[in-house]
Image 1 (spheres, rainbow, N blue to C red):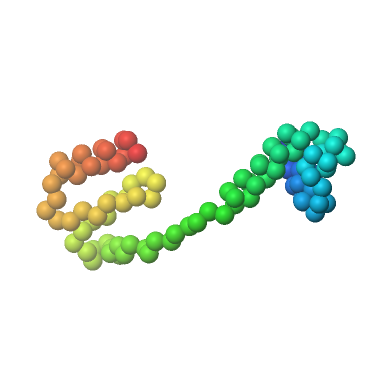
Image 2 (image 1 turned 120 degrees about the horizontal axis):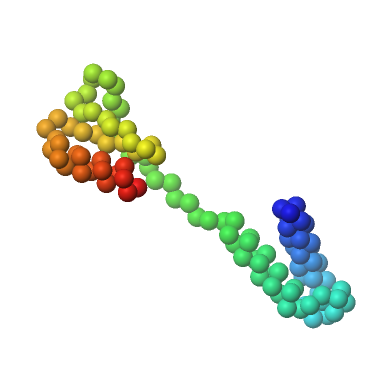
Length: 109
């Protein structure tokens, strides 16, 4: 079924392109080929919106430097969580606060 959809998009892409090159009005082009004008305009819009969706601005943020911890070399400990998240816990942390934070991160997200 996916192939059928791709063929349909290719067909209409070709028709819209052909009409643009023909110099004919949409009405004349559709009448000559037995197409409904409303369907032609619908596909023209779909194709235009599909092309617009391909180009999305992306901004790359600078990586945030995290201290690289190796066992036994740092004062902080790293707690690794689900989905690649982690917490750095320095000496003197509040245990109740840490438990609440862990419960919120692991339970709700």
